[in-house]
Image (cartoon, rainbow, N blue to C red):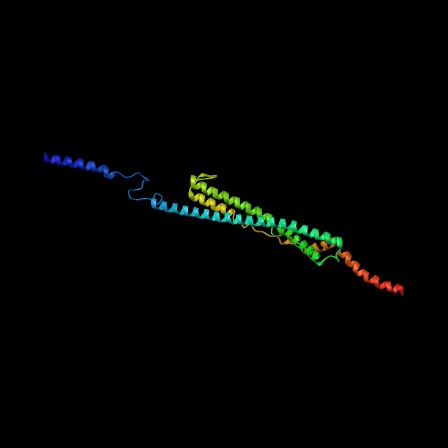
Length: 238
């Protein structure tokens, strides 16, 4: 009887242990203690920190570009405003001195009046050509456009930090948004500074036109003819 009990207990123990040793984890499930790289919390935290650092770097670069284009916009606008005022003032001075010179004539007029007239005429000509030489209006338009575009990109980055969503793609991964910002910055990478040397005025032509209005050429011809007439006078008296 004792031998039969021992055999029965051995049989039950082997049958109970069989299924436990034969059981295997389902396919595709990682075994205990084996963690993949995608589920590693420390690695995910490191990647997230790098993404945040890159986003901060992009935002800092955008801020620098905003300051640059805003300062350029103010500079070119102040140049345009100043030259417009200067052209009006110098043209008025040249017109007033021209009036006095015309009344008296070129030769009897004061040397100060002639100097002021010629200096105001040349300076007004240069100031009138200054916006075309340095392309002020074009530089103003380009810097204003880039300034507003960078403001828009900065607002998009602030909205993404708050909502984790892009403006045109909805919810996106930070890596995708970083590449999207890089593409935008590359398309806006432009230095809005231009000039056109062909717009430099011809000062000789401007002076000739100004002297023609004063009648200086006619007075010069009168001076060349007057000595001949004075020489012929005594010859006829003899």
